[in-house]
Image 1 (cartoon, rainbow, N blue to C red):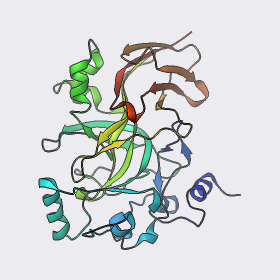
Image 2 (cartoon, rainbow, N blue to C red):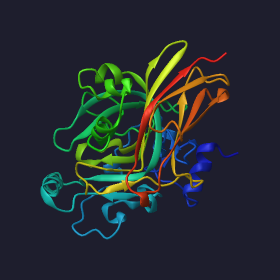
Image 3 (cartoon, rainbow, N blue to C red):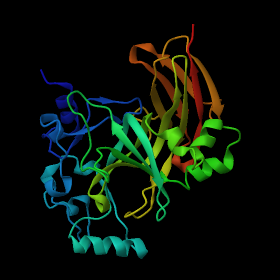
Amino acid sequence: MLGAVTLLAFQVAAGGVGPADLLSRTQDRNGFPLNPFWQVQDTSPTARPAIGVLCALRWPRQPAAVADYFGNPGCTSQLARLSVEAPLRGFSARICDAAALREPRFPGHLNWFPVTVTGQGDWLHVDLLDHDANFLLRPDPVGTIPMPGITSRIPGGKSAYKLEFDSREVFEAIATTHAGLPLWDRALNSQERKRTLNAKRYVAIGLFSLDAEHEYWAELHPVWGLAIQVQADADAESWIVFARNSGNEGGCSSRARLLLPAGEDGYSGLRFDLPSALANPGVAVEFRDIFGRDATVHAEPANHAVRLDVPLGTPSLGVQLLFGEVRLTRGS
């Protein structure tokens, strides 16, 4: 009998899979792969595949299709689902072009599709050049795979995803529009940010990307949705959350806005499953936010999660960012 991994793989590519296929055992409620992993990790759980070498990625001068970037297009059966974000003009393009010719190698971002990753996260910094907010996220193991989806190590030798989003699109937007959200105040305060955000439980929803400018790091960039459990004890938990429908990819990319697709059932918004020890039918929920009137939440005791659904407008309605705080307290 075929296992869940094989079944999902054949749904993606009936003709078989490639070692650089991004797979998952399950999907989240948005229809996105949950904690995805590389096909090579299915047979070699501790592998960190060198995708650039495996796919012989290159930098064609006049690419007409994603396949033109691949010297070995047979490395993945998912070419039709991939996209490339690379700078086309301006100062960033010249820098990235120079790096490509010097190596030589592919610059920019090679994108798969939206995914959801859960795990333990930490705050890093805001980049002074492209204004990106940077986090680390160590993904939860998937079966025997200790670091699903991870490629090369990042500076400091850590195995983790980079989470990135333009701080102006999120942090500055929240800082100028919110009123009286104490946990978000701490997250936005540069003096308190590390203490608030480090070694915390994260649920991140974003575009899976390999950043070739930085050794093909695995990233979620842009992040469209992020929930961080900033406080937790035996009787209460508090989360800060944001959800949005677009974002740019920064760095060696065209910086075009990348739009969040609707979930598989057409839902226009983001659905979070917040892992919680308090997930029981009596859990009490307090919203401190601007989405509390529209968001819905309910406990899933069997899954040890509290489900939070945040509705968003369709892209035709323009850029939308919703954010807030959710406090859970033990029910009777």
